[in-house]
Image 1: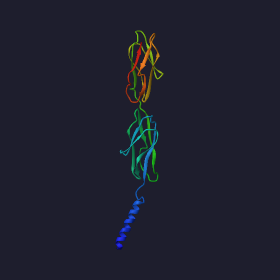
Image 2: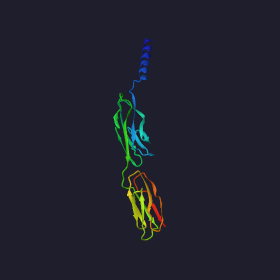
Image 3: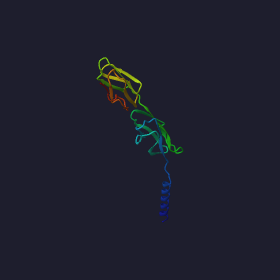
Image 4: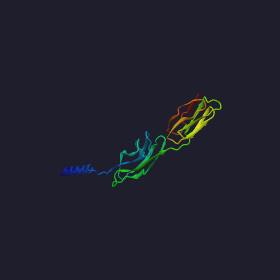
Length: 196
């Protein structure tokens, strides 16, 4: 009978120790996102599995927690459209004395590309006439014959706005597809300038 009581007492003591936080503490892994453009998201992974999508600048934290003494490794899974991001302080070991990790920085910057040309076609221009076009108020192109034209390449993300600056003598020109936004590398839809 004494042996039974002793076993029961030892079992209760073991359960009590296990229930009183005998295991290691856990910490949340997070940090700050900077430079993210509006209406874009950056995808992050912690240790290759815990996924998080961040859609605004500011603080972030993964849902999963990491036990003290374990390694965390925050990496990018997807860059935002038109931007490139880097992770700083993404690798480390959780310390029970420090607690939650909030020192990771995800820094995003616009992609630089020379392949984002604003192009178009002029039609209806009479012989010997010319039309001067502007993109974004400063990049000027003078077209002296019907056919294609090209403005300087833009770095993405960027907006473009093509207007007629100097119309041809005795003619009126209209612009179609003249405004928009370039979110990724590549030429934009063709701008059409029709003169009558």
